[in-house]
View 1 (spheres, rainbow, N blue to C red):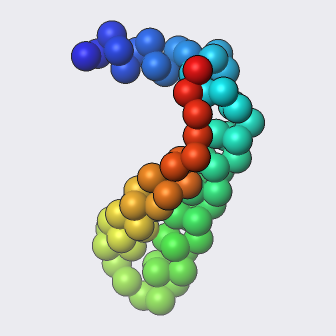
View 2: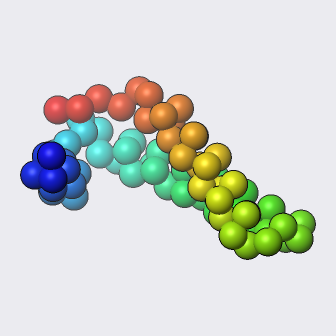
View 3: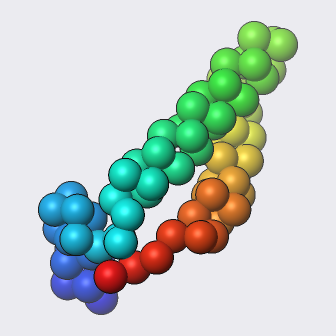
Length: 74
């Protein structure tokens, strides 16, 4: 299982895992930006940082399947 994950990471970094690597990087960047915005907004309201990070990570992680739904593998 570790070898499978290692091979997938290597193929991703080489740009050979997905049919359109630029689309993957764009969708990943969108997810990171949305998660960071949620984190900063929730933290600025006065919520403790650990709760803000937990909530932002949960929402950002829940957003990833939606962002990655149309990606094609090679």
